[in-house]
Length: 215
Image 1 (cartoon, rainbow, N blue to C red):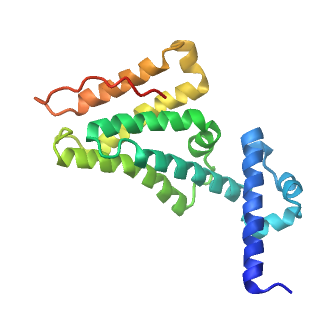
Image 2 (image 1 turned 90 degrees about the horizontal axis):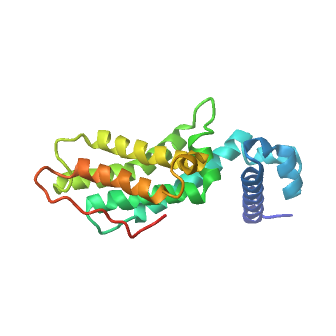
Image 3 (image 1 turned 180 degrees about the vertical axis):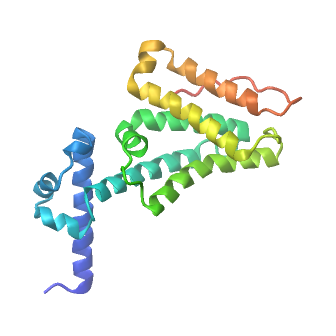
C-alpha cells in the first residue's frame, strides 16, 4: 500500500504528465486538438482520470495560458535591467515581440483564444502582473524625470502595450510580411522611436535610435 507521501508524488507525476500531453497536443493541433481521450491515450490513464487533476479541458488550457504569461513576465522583468526608463521601454518592446515570434502558440492562447466565460480571478491577476511590470518602469521613469511628468502612468502603459501588441499581432498573422517585406526591424525601430520621442520630457536631449539589438 502506498503511503501518503508516495500517493502525493504519484499524483504530482500524473498531473505533470497530463499537462505535458495537453501542451504537445495544443502546440501541434491547436485547442481543437486537445481532448480528454487524446490526453488519456498519451499518458496511459482513463479519460475520466484527467478530471481528478483538472476541472475541464478549459482548465487545462488555462494552465497553459498562465505558462505563457510566466515566460513573457520573465522576459519583460529581465529586459534592460539597470538601464534608464526609456531604454527599458525599448528593451521591453523588443522582448515582447521576440516572445510572440518565438512562442506563437502561447501568444495565441494568451491573447486570442480566451475562454468565453472569462478567466478565473487568479488568472486575470497574473495577466495584470505582466502588464504591471511595464507600468512600474513607466512610473519609475516619471519619478526620476526620465519620462514626461504630465502623462498618466496607466495611459502611457496601455499606449505602449497596444502599440507593441499590434505590431506583434501583425507579424504573427503574416500581414507585416505582406505589407512591409523584409522591414520588420525597421517598423519596430520606428514604433519604439516614436514612443521614446513622445515620452521624453520637453527640453531633454532626444535619444538617438538604438538599432543594434534585433529580434
